[in-house]
Structure formats: structure tokens, C-alpha cells
Amino acid sequence: MSRTLHLTEQLISRPSVTPDDSGCQRILSERLRALGFVCETLESGPDNFRVTNLWAKRPGSRADAPTLVFAGHTDVVPTGPLDQWSSDPFTPTHRGGRLYGRGASDMKTSIAAFVVAAEEFLQAQPQPELSLALLITSDEEGPSVDGTVVVCRELQRRGEKLDFCIVGEPTSVERLGDMIKNGRRGTMSGKLVVKGIQGHIAYPQLARNPIHQALPALAELAATEWDRGNDFFPPTSWQISNIHAGTGATNVIPGHLVVDFNFRFSSESTAEGLQQRLQAVLERHGLEFELQWTIGGRPFLTTPGTLVGAIQQAIRDEVGLETELSTTGGTSDGRFIAQLCPQVIEFGPINASIHKIDEHIAVADIDPLKNIYRRTLENLDAGLRPKATP
Image 1 (tube, rainbow, N blue to C red):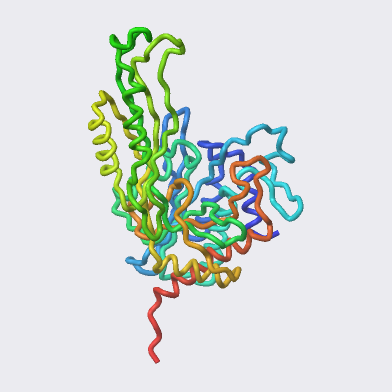
Image 2 (image 1 turned 120 degrees about the horizontal axis):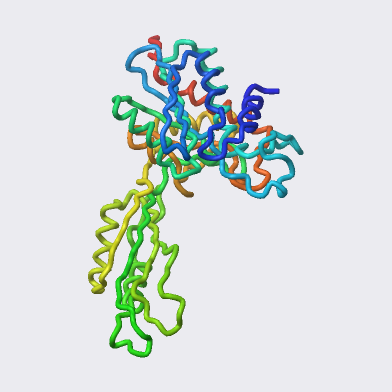
């Protein structure tokens, strides 16, 4: 059995449903300390939702060595109905060339591959030009308020400088290496309360119907072109997710209307600019309203350069693919790391079974994934070494 597969199975065996790390990070710390990493555990959150975070770093051969961070999460989503699984979700099981278990794709294999890639890289290059670090949380599948964001704030407080980051999210689509994420759209949610005057439906002149008042404004917002996107991002999208008004009675004009909505926005727009434009529409339509905003993450983008080039070459050398750059999909913890790290990408295994019953990964992809991470380290380190003069 390969070392990466063995470590993956160790991690899957831990029932680390968010926010419980279930000892996964302790296993990682033992391996990393043997490589010279300094490992810190940073806990956060209330007693009934305690989050475990690991920050582990091994300095390079010089004080100003650039730092590459592998980032990921040991927590997994709940299993769903156990009787629908073909095998116990926390007992690593092999069938038909696949490894089954919760977290197999999202993202315990990536974490195992991080560690073994670092082991192999440091065995071949004990004094690298590159500093290595791992940032691992147990709060990525949960609210994400006591996980990576807490570690990033602490690193900023210390003045820690990060240069490159690979988040081990499952980004491949049909074949390992066919896609990496070099950015993500921003996400911002809002709750709009349009105020009316409740009354009897037979006497509309004595009431004010917030549904009737709001519909023209909502129609305008739905038809608005917020931006046109760019070469890396699709245009910003505004979508209503929930809408509610009324008491349930058919003869009562409601006193208020509640609308939940979300922006997924490109780097062509800012959260503040979108807020101002939406509020201006509501005001122009003469609505009496209240607004609450929640910014889930701002957009980030890593344009082709040092890190993208290093991993593209690693994928090319390992699996022979020309990888696609993409910013599609939801959000990841990369949005927090991008606030202090200029080059952040996401790369990991095929994502077809993530969060599903019988989550799995092809066993044949496990060591190539590790090799791609190791080759990326080698490519970055080689680029930092002084060029030999003829």
C-alpha cells in the first residue's frame, strides 16, 4: 500500500463531522513534526461548536524564503442515511478500484497527499529555498467563522508573509488534472424587508400592500446587468432565494414582505458598489424598507504566473493534460487566504461524488495527485535557486 493511500485511510477512519476534527490533525502533526515543522493548534468557537485549526510551518534555507501553504479541512459533511451507504462511511472500503468513505474526495485524500508530497520533497531536498506550511481547519463545511479565517487573522497580526497557496478542494471534473480553480466569485447575501400596512383585503384604500409595491423594484433588479464579467469571471448574478409575505389568510393584506437574495459577483464589481446600486433602485421606487447584508467572501483571482505555471507544468508532466483554468462553482476557504496571499489556487481530485452517498475516489488517482503536489514544490523551488553561470 502506498503511503498516501495508507494516510488517507487513517483520516477517513476518523468520524470528523464538522466541527469535530476527531484527532485527524493530531495524526498530521506527528508526521509533520518529524519533518521539522513547528505545529500549532488554534482552537476557536463556543463550547458546543469547538473548532480545531492546525498551523504548521517549516522555514526554508534562508530567512526571506517564500512560503507555500497547503490549505484544507479535516471536517466532512454529515453522512446522510447510513442504510443508503454500501459500506460504513467511516470504514475505508475498496470496491472496483475505488476507495469509499466520507471525505475520500472532499478532502482527506488531498490532505494525505499534501503530507506525503512534503515528505518526499524534503527527503530529496532537505534544505529547500521554499518555506512550507499547512493550514488545516475543522470548520470549512460548517459556518466557516472559526476556522481558516481565524488562522488568517492571527497570521496577519503576526505579520506572517504568505506567497503561494494551494487549496486541496476537489476541482477535477472528468480526469485528474483537467481543471484548477484560479479564483472564485464573491458571495454576498441580503435580507430585504419591505414595509406596508396590514389591512382587510376588501378595503385596500386603508392598507398598503408591500407585495404590490415591491414587485416593480424586484423585476428591475432581476433584469439589471450588474457587470459584464471579464476574461476570468462570468457576469455578476443576482438571485432571489426566498420570498415571504402574509399571514396565511386569504382576506388579509400583509404588513410586510421579506426577500432573501444573493449576489455572486465578479472582480468587476465590489460589494459596496452593489449594495449602493441595489439600494438606489429600492429608493427610486419609493419603498419603505430595511436591509441587512452578509458578505460571505470577496472575489479573488490568481492570473497566470509563478504558481499557476508551476502546477500546470506538474500536471502536464504527471498526467499529460493541459489543465483548464476556471473560477466557476461556489466558495472555498481560498477567499480568506487570498486576503494575505497574492497567489491562491485550488486543485484536487475528481469532484463527482463529493457530499454524496458512497463518496469515493479512484485509487489510481491517489499517488498521481500526491506527485502533482510534489512536482509543484519542485518546480517552485527550482525557480528560486540561483542560475548556474556557464
